[in-house]
Each structure stands twice: as structure tokens, then as C-alpha cells.
Length: 243
Image (tube, rainbow, N blue to C red; front, side):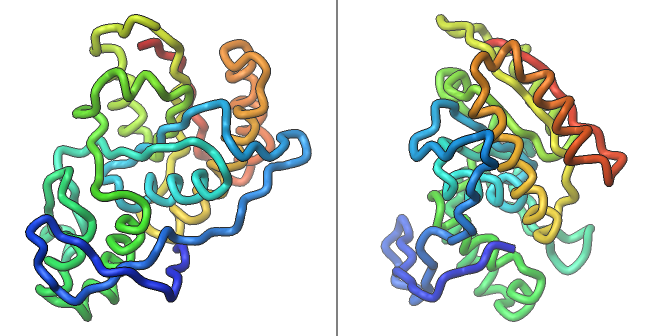
């Protein structure tokens, strides 16, 4: 899991309630230097979207790792609500998309701070607060914002399918530009998200360094599968869409 810094600033709530809680500044990760074939670019030429179910674990890990490495990135979830682990699989804590991470943190800490710290959910909320205000739902995001992304990384096959289906049902934008949708299947826990965040960064650097992304992306993804994913049966999925 991404480490949390020691410095802190007060959490700000919409109702100006002084709750006495604190959140860290933007989480720090290793700088993620690209391989020699993909020179570091302080301002990336591509825009990346990273997507999981609730925009709090896998996609937020990708958001932090890619952003701290200098890539332009935004994160999303495709679920109907933000679902966080409770005391059992049948008892999740549910929030609406758009609920500030700080508000989720305060709600859960008030309910049972020790438990939600032990299961890691408070740490995820704190990390989210250090990156942006609230989780964003992919399907509710305007097409103009979605179309600004050149590459979208989904961290589960069903999420990949949901992203592709959504892109295919939206009305085309004036630019009708290509969007490269890729699936890096990842178990929904902080440990696996941390590992795949680094894998995602390696792939995104290769795509960032492409001369003609439409022509080169399929081969880049295929070679990445062969070289980097030989230890697993998980296949890297790819779909070229337009919006």
C-alpha cells in the first residue's frame, strides 16, 4: 500500500464542521523512472484514465503512481455506488459517488475507528483525500472529459467490459478521437493494487513513448503481455474505441 506521509493538514468539510481529523498531503511513491526506451516526460503527451469499481483502491493506486511519475491521469469507478469492506462481505459500507473521501473517513472513524483502521479502509480514504476531493463515476462523467483520454486502463475484466460498452453507447464527440482501452486484471486488495500500479506504470511509459499510438498500441500490448505477464494466466485485454 502507498505509504502515508507524516505531515498533515486539516480536513475541510462542506458544512465547515471542525472535526479535528487530519489528512496527509499527496501520497508519496517512488518516482517511477521509465525504462531507457521511454524517456521521462515531466508533462506527458498522453492523457490516461484509470478505472476500478469504487475509485478508492486499484484506480487510486494507479492515479497516485502515474501522477507522481509525471503522467497526466484521472481516476474513476464504474460501480453504482462506492462499496467499502465492512465486518463481512454481506455488510459493506456504501457511499454515493461524489461523497468526499474526507467525509467517508469521518463517518467510518466515528462508527469504529479501530476496526476500519485495522481493515485498511481508513488508510484508503486518507490517501484519496490527498489526491482529489471525491470518487468519480465513469458513466456520469461528461463525454468531453472522457474523450480527453488517449488511454484507459481498467483493473478488472468486467470493468473493462463496462468501459467499452459505455464508450460504444455514448454519442460521438466532434473530434471522434481514438481511445485505447486496456485491461490489467487485478484483485481488489491493497497489496495487489500496489503491485499492479507499478505494472500499469511500465505499460503506460511504453504507450507514452509510441510515435503512432493507433498503429503501435496493439503490438505494444501484445509484447507487454509476453514479457511482463508470463508468470500469470491473466491476459491483457485491448480494445480500440472512438468517441
